[in-house]
Image (cartoon, rainbow over all chains, first blue to last red):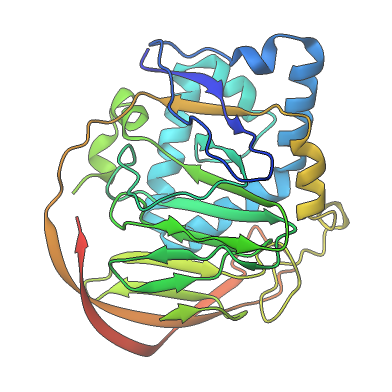
Length: 197
Length: 114
């Protein structure tokens, strides 16, 4: 009732520019038109997520290792959301990821921000891919901490709590795949208290 | 401060609040990090070239909840500790494969927002 599937791919071809990543909301869980408008589009998307299987499972595992309490809460959310929304249950047959949000960002520099839609006790998981060779650090201004995020690297962070930004990179295309969960889904499932302070 | 090598690290506040966990080489065998599986079905790892190819299909899905209101959150002075970790090779990666030890290597204080 309060969210919907929408396009999760923002393609930016070099030279760099920024995409409009604002999310449109229609108040209902629906598949994105870009994904389901043709059989081929749906097939390719399903294939993509199936090939993310190993990455998704690693992220689930790592989340559990880093914060078992949050992992348990996220598992509860996933189960409850699947029971409530058959479309999500269907998609979970392809994608085992517990985070309900995933984007593919190509060659995008994210400015300083916090993830205002995330619960305070939630994490965001950033995975980097592409063929860039240097730079592209994840910088936390409040901590004065600069974390490597080269292709193949993964960082879990408190995206709602910590300001963060992506720095410039060199050497080629940068693909960023953030994984996240939003407060409104927790609220919809009556589990917001599990991830609030 | 820069975390720029192949060592996974975890940063937590003194009250046990995890802030950042870094896993360099998450999907590769580079450096000290290893999330290998003995399951041959899992050796086809996701790598950047693979994702590049897939991404060219220009399709993906995302579950998108409504936008959360931008409520201000209070500032808190936090005492931060950084822990080194290491990843262990897994025979069954459905079980623990990562060990983050309790050897604190650095302490400092800063302001973060809760």
